[in-house]
Length: 600
Image 1: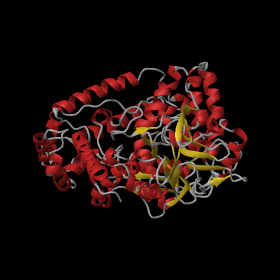
Image 2 (image 1 turned 180 degrees about the vertical axis):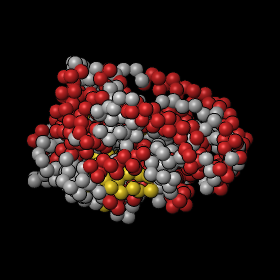
Image 3 (image 1 turned 45 degrees about the horizontal axis):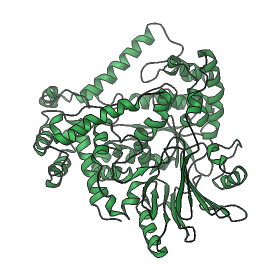
Image 4 (image 1 turned 90 degrees about the vertical axis):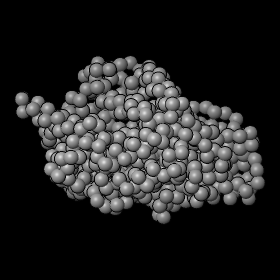
C-alpha cells in the first residue's frame, strides 16, 4: 500500500542510500506505483515514498515558497473546509501558518514527515486512529521507520524473528494487540504520534491528540443526539465525494452503511458508478439489494464475481495477501486482492461504507476465538490462552474508544492494507467530526439501528423502504417485516453453519451426500466466498503441498501429527478444520514470504 520509508541517524550516506532503495523496493507492489526519495545527510535523513498515481499524495516532496519547509505525506486529508481538496501541496501552507497545531487539524488516514530546515528538526507523525501505520526499530545510532514492516526486515536481518506472544494473539484474536507487530524488535508508532528528531537524535515522543477530550464530552439525550447526527453526517459526507484527480466509485452491499452514503450523496444520474462483490452460486443478497439501490439513485451497477478464476489464482493471491499485509491479514484476504484488482478497473478510488456499523452502531467486530487445542504445541497453546485474557483487559473503558482506537488499527488495518495495495479507499465513517459525535450518544443510542434507518429515510425515503440483507426497512410493514427479517437471519445462519461453521461430525455426512449438491441450497445467499468447500475440493492439492511440507511440519508452534490428521480429514471431507487451516496456512506463508524469502 502507499506509504513512507526512512532512516534517521548517523552513518554513511552511500550505505544509507542503498538501504533506502531496498526498503522502498519492498513496498512497490504494482508496476504503476509512483515512488521518490529525498536525502539530507546534514540532518541525517533518508526518506522515500510510494503513492498511487493521481492520488492526493502524488506530489511529493512538497516545499514551501522559501524552500525551508518540506512535507512528505502518505494518505489523505479531509480537514480543509474548502470545497476543493486539490492535493497535499496545500498542507505545507497550513503547517507554515499553524506550526505544530497543524497536526491536530488533519483529518484522515495518513503518515508523514515535516522537515523544518529553519529549526533543523524533523517531525514524524501519523493519524489519530493509527491506520496510517508506521513500523519502527530504534538503536542508539539510528531509527528505521516504514509503513510496512517488510521494509525494515529488508535492511535489518536481525528483525526477521517472530514474537511468539504476538503471534499467539493472532491465533486467539486474529491480530496482534497494542503497539506491537508479530516481528520481534519491530514496534508500531502509537496513534496520533508526533515524534521530534533534532541533531540526528529522537528528542521527543509526544502525541498531538488525547482521546480523553472526546471521552469527557456531555452525553446527549437521544433526540438531541439524533439531531446532531442529522446535521453532521450530510455535512462531512461532502468531503469524501470529491473526485479530485482520480475517478470515484462506490462499493455497495445490502446493509445500511452504503445506502446511508447514497441517501445523502444525491449524485447526478450516472455520476457515481456502483459495484458489489459477488460469487458463483447465485446473486447474493448484497448484489440483489445493491442493484436496487443503484437503480433507485439513477446510477450504474456492476457485479464483480469471485469464482473459478479466483480459485485458479489462489496460491499466488494467498502469498500476495500475506506479503502485502505483513502477515496481519489471513489467507482469506486473497479474495480482497482479487476483488479490488477488478474494482480498480472501474475507478482508482473506492468509496465504501466500511466501519459504519462499528462507529455509528457500536459493533464489536473481533473477539477471541477457539481452535482445536490439539493443533498447538503446549507452550504456544499457553500463550494463546494468555492472549484472550489480554483482550479482555483491553475491552475495559469507553466502547467507542475501543472501536475507534483499538479495533480499527489492530483488526481492521489488515484488510485495509490489502485493499489499499490495489485501490485508494475512502470512508466517511472515520471522519474526526463523526467519531467525536459518537461519544455523545447514550449507550443505548449507540447500539440503535433505528437512528440509521431514520437518517436514510430523511435523505432518501425510497432507499429506507428497500429491505436490508437482514430484512430491516422503514417504514416497517407489520408482521411482513418481522417475517422477512427472521427469514434473512435464518438463511444467513444456515449458510454459516453449512460452510465455515459446519460441525465436524456433519461434514462427513455432507460429503457422503455430495452427489445431491446440497451447497446449492445454502451457499451464495449472503457470502461470496466459501473456504470450507474450497479447502476440501479445489484447493485440497495446494493445502497438501504447503501444509504437509517438512518445513511446515517442523515449525515450533504446531503439533505435526495433528496437522497431518487435519489436512487429510478436511480434504477427504470427513471433518471441518477451516479455522485451523486458515491460521496454519497464514503462519506458514508469513514465515516463507517475510522471513525466509530473499530480499527483493
